[in-house]
Image 1 (cartoon, helix red, strand yellow):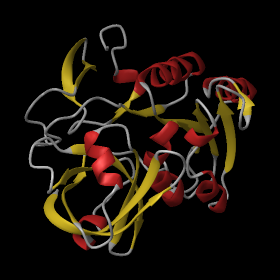
Image 2 (cartoon, one colour):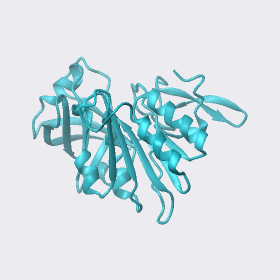
Image 3 (tube, helix red, strand yellow):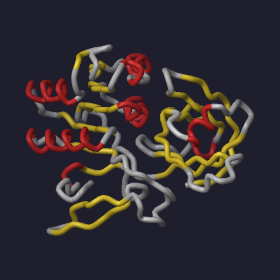
Image 4 (cartoon, one colour):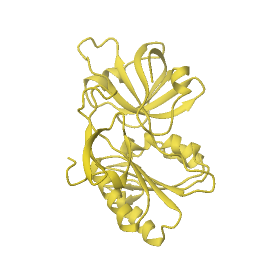
Length: 261
């Protein structure tokens, strides 16, 4: 984990209110593992004391990138920043995904909205190509589809309004695929909590291993404030663990859904 002030290389609109930010941070980029995140602070926003966590999307040489949606004061200000301006960054943070071993399980990636950002490095570094299931409310919420296709992965898209791919929820084609067979497969997911819970239930039902990136509100990002805790099984009992340090990725069998929000 490093804290640095880093320059923006590019900050461009992707679709609708989604943007791609690239920063030059060679020391951080060198350390990034799939599923980890960075904590950003806009130096010019003096009244915004809290950083904002973003999954690290891509790493290329001395740079890494994130995908984000302009939804509030902080991300709106971020969307207006230009190359050469600087951000304060802490990263890479968190416990990421387990990259499949050569000849190991075939990965099935499941993402809702910009949960896709957390999946790209996993797909890029996996020795086995698999399937990507991505869902969103509408076409504009389906991100980085071409990047995954360029890696040679098969993508199955769902939108709730039917504007792109199959109409419905991303869990529908996933369930159909699991019913075809589960031997030698492993689930990886990132997205809204209801989607993650459904993926966890499928993992139990079909006895498939699964790793879930839990999307909880984080304030400090380094395990101090305890605002991002979730209930996790420990032995015969359970305890709260921090998604920013012990997570955000957890084995789905350890999550206590009955107690989680």
